[in-house]
Image 1 (tube, rainbow, N blue to C red):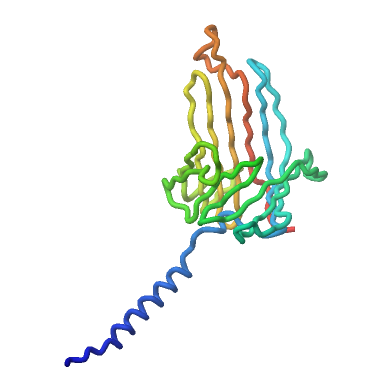
Image 2: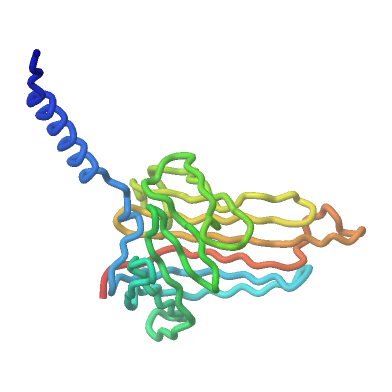
Length: 228
């Protein structure tokens, strides 16, 4: 009977498996597009316009500071980071206005706020990558897409490793406008958030004239970040 020496084959397979393990360990999933650690904070200048009706609106300028306040383990053993949001008119006196939570689950950044779970980022980021932001929610699906990957300018500052996540870009110019996106930068986190959700006057005398009937425009731009 011919005996086959299988030792070389086992050796080759072991080497290949070891190389695969090294490659997996060295894979950059881009988790630092949203760093999470107790004490980290982000300050934003905010412009908010609330529309009450035709030719009736109110614009306010203020500041938000989001700070990782504490963590806990959820029922799945995943670390949840609780973010305290504070508001100020002068960046000196801060008042807490609420909180939300962030966690990473199945290579997805999940934001828990107002009894809603939204996947705001998918790791690793790739151009034109799309996902259902409501996959962990009971609400209808809502697709988010990465529509920019690379350089981005904000407040005259150029960021080389930026990702823009498009939530919605729709305007039928008759009844509504819904434009929303967020921008993340590697090593920093979210640097910008834009939301413009409006309804137009739909009466016969104003239909199609894009007269704003109600809605809100909210724009956050980062001005400072770090660790306390």
